[in-house]
Image 1 (tube, helix red, strand yellow):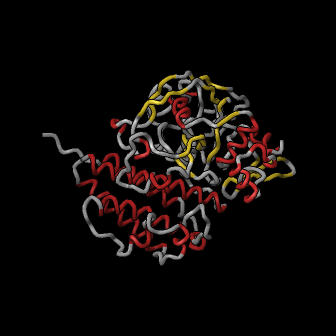
Image 2 (cartoon, rainbow, N blue to C red):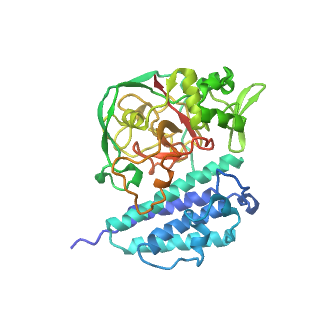
Image 3 (cartoon, rainbow, N blue to C red):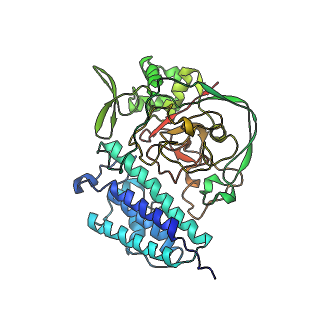
Length: 423
């Protein structure tokens, strides 16, 4: 008789890797640096670390096995559904040392369970829920470091940066028709907002083969785009005036040209790299100025996949020759790089480099039903917009062509840009 298969080979390794990455994002920070100022776009770093472990423990040891929490008051400290954002700064959080001890105890218990338990679909679902939740919070930790200007953390050996390409590639022509978007049961773990695959009718459209680059966006800035109310939606103009925005977040003019802040460093603005840290309002204003528009998320997915596939290039996992993910390069690269990773329609970097805003408000697919983690999607329907594709900071195992990210339209801290369609 063959031995009973366990999940240890895959999920356990991934969970340990996710935890190692999470800890690497704070390992070099002093206790003082961990004490974040109250900002509406970040979490306190000690709270975020404890929340990562709490979430994994809640859905595995507590949910699957009915075990008591490792910390007696864990729900009152770390349940993000119950604790308002601003209240997280006033909580009696464990010390850094005690937080790290809690994280290690939680991970050790989970890895023991995985090693001992036969594989079953229900357990694997919650293991992967914990894994991908940690991956998402890991990216949030990296965004926090960028927001407050801490150095880029060590991400291991980085791949050699692809050369910049001075050419733009024009538009891809996408034929109209009926297309299937969304996830199917055989896709394995999926979040509730990806369920389920359904047909959409798409009119023929043209979409840029590359994301908007710094040179293109700089032309909008220097043409006075941030001062021309006609280019902005009413809500967008109100945001621009309140924020006193004159250019993308982290851009700075200098005597020798424009620069942008990348963590603690100020770097010359590279013309061929994607514009970053623009919000949905800015993306739309740029499109109006350029005589273009944002793609719907359905158009984006069709342009990224052609026929249904997990990645633009096919079913093979991402690697550094195909996409910019996982911190492999430690920064963005030229928007025309990775010809081998383009979609069947010739669109490049539909996965990796920078998240891309779409025109679509975040909402349910037909027949949506919330998953076990009910707070993941449904509370945000109607107030957020969909982004697609992932960024250089996104874990490669997390993102696919169907994966739906979502943020409020005023958020600029995201490592996000845009791709445009012909009107």
